[in-house]
Image (cartoon, rainbow, N blue to C red; front, side, top):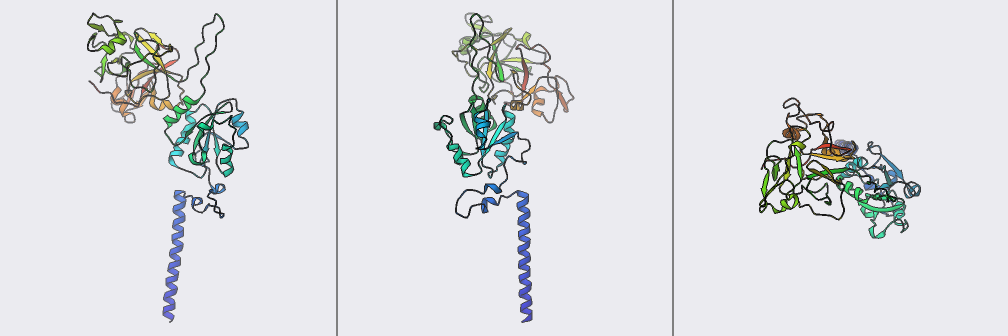
Amino acid sequence: MDNDHTQKSLILRFLLLGLCCGLVIAFVIATIFHWDFSAIWGRSSSGDNTSSYESSESVLGTEWPGLVYEEVTSGTFSAKVLKSAKDEIVLLCDPTEKSEAMQSLTDNIDMMLDEQLKVFYLRSPEDYKFWGSLPKAIIDHTQYHDPVTEAPLLAYFSKGKLLGFHRLLTTEDDISYWIYHTRPKAPTPIPTAGQPTPTPTMGPTLYRAFPRSLFDTLNAKSSDEYYLSELILMPRSVSLLNTIMSGSKSVMNIQDNTALYSLIADTFGGTSQTFGLPDLQDELPIDGLNYFLCEKGLFPTRGDEVMATVTSGDIKYVPAPIDWISDDFYAGSIILAKNIKPDDFRMRYLQPCDGRLLNAKEEFVLYSIFGNRFGGVKDQSFRLPDLNSGDIPIEGALYYIITYGIYPVSN
């Protein structure tokens, strides 16, 4: 009997010891991976499915120290958002919901915005009801998004009026596009008698280059692929796919190139069967570069508005407001742009042409295109061309290199 009792006691002790070890291991794992037990145990005993907001951490708290934001509540919303003299972007989010996608997007969103991001936490059922109770004068209910089912959401307010909603869980480029097209456009000033119309202030703008024969009503977009007859500036001395290198061919046959002829005509000479192409060797900002004319691409269509084009020599620059930069541009191509701030998110796809020295291994794609023609140590470093310290054909613009796009190949 004593032996049986001793054996049962030992078995019970081992079971208790195993249970304790299991609880300790589970606690350690939960600590490491930040399990949120409120999702399991945080329901109210009354059967209400509302999460226990009070016990949860903020998704935009100390975990994301890089984010600049200001919290607003139903009590401060009117003063801080509806009565604000500037545009306000408000993020609606449930503080119990966490995801890597939300963290990454929200951590970077303040870099996209000129405005400071504000955050409205949906902590209780009253917070959800608050959005549904806003006056119809503030929210256009045909465009209303339900924060209960669609949060996290971005809401764009201007002078107390909600201009639009956008889901947060999307791409950064998509959010940037939404912000650009949602924000109110500055009205064109009405000139007084005898005074010219002032030029409206422009945001970030890409200048797309064409032969000077192009019409002035092209409504160019920065997100479009290359247009037919567009000029590409590249560090190449060989052919480029679907283009003609300036100086390599002086004339083309009209019958075989009617679309291109309709854009260039006889501006640069020709005969009844041929038309001339511009020789842009004298237009190059420095040696080591070449212009390439697109013999294939989107056909430029005429718009109703005369654009503020700039003509320098045989090149016409057409402004294109930057929402995002086309993925169909050649990596290593050089563009002219203005009003891009150094901390602008668009700079992730650009490098200023200021003669800076780059690591050949870290920027191996650009190095394979530029090599050491502008300086550097072979296979270790390379220097970008310095174009911004010289003459620039557009006031206030700078030269930039496209770092992300199609890799350039020959015909």
